[in-house]
Amino acid sequence: MLVVRLAHDPVAAGLLDQLARLERLLQLIDLRPQPLQLAEARQRAVGPRARTQAEGFDVGFEDLPDGHLNQPNAEYFRFLDKLLDILVEHGLVPVLQPVFQGFGWKGLDVAGTVVPPAEYAAYCRYLLARYGAPPAIYLAGGHGNSGYARAVLATTDGRHFRSVAMLPVPVRYPAVAVAGGDLWVFGGLTPHGPVADIQRVNLRTGQAQRAGRLPRPLEAGSAFTLADSIYVAGGTTIGSPGTQGGARPLVTTSVVRRFAPRNRSFQIAGRLPAPVSHAAVAVTGGVAYLVGGLDGSQPVRTISTLRLGGSAGLVGKP
Image 1 (spheres, rainbow, N blue to C red):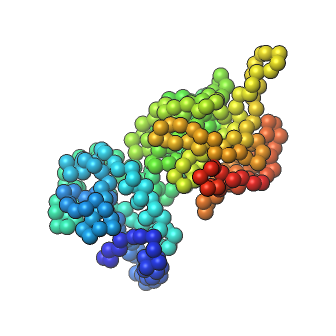
Image 2: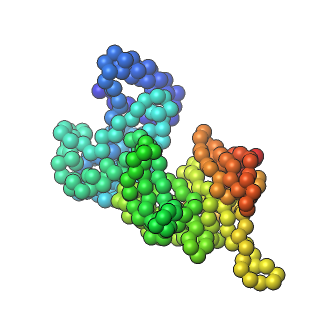
Image 3: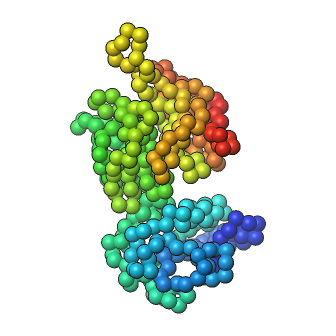
């Protein structure tokens, strides 16, 4: 086994390129992968809490020294996200070893023999939800013969689905994004019209709850993640009352809002080149692409790209 401390530097990049070539060769000859193994849990090890210092390491769970996996360190997993991205960029398939078994790191105790099985299983589900094997597609809410749906479904092949949670507020046409192991569901349509509810699904535990409110009711928006931030773009919202009073009209919006999960707050980050709802969205290479959609009842035939424009917000163009 070759142990590598991953880093963003040319030396590490060159080594990973060599490992990728060796990996492909071993697979062709041996038909057996030789993946790098990353350990997420270390028990009773002593050293500086810093990856850049000798004998140093970071901590994935604050309560691991007590033999539990209930207090995850969010910063640890955000950094692990970046490390796994490095492997994938160089053509290497990471294999996650959730909890040490057998011989302990630094020759100390292992967590696998003392962590409660339920916590071990929950941690494995968390890793599966966060990193996928392969990546999962989530369907939140919807509408069918039985009315508005509460179920959040997951699939890895588009044919077989499993229920992972039940939404407190059944909706269709919500904006949905995954960040940090949580599925965020923004707004959506109910029998009474668009709602402003924000619903959070913990993909590790399957628990779903109301987690805040949008500034305005919204349906058919598009949600995506850029640089660890969640954005909600476009959609249909409730407009201002007319001069003659009566019901407030539904209008399509071009507003893009940045959502901060920690304090459940929104900030206007920019505007789309044109109002749009029901747009398909995909993110690649640090750019979000909004494809098609509707402006009222009229189809939108443009593709808008959104990328971070400094600290001010997003820059979009058709």
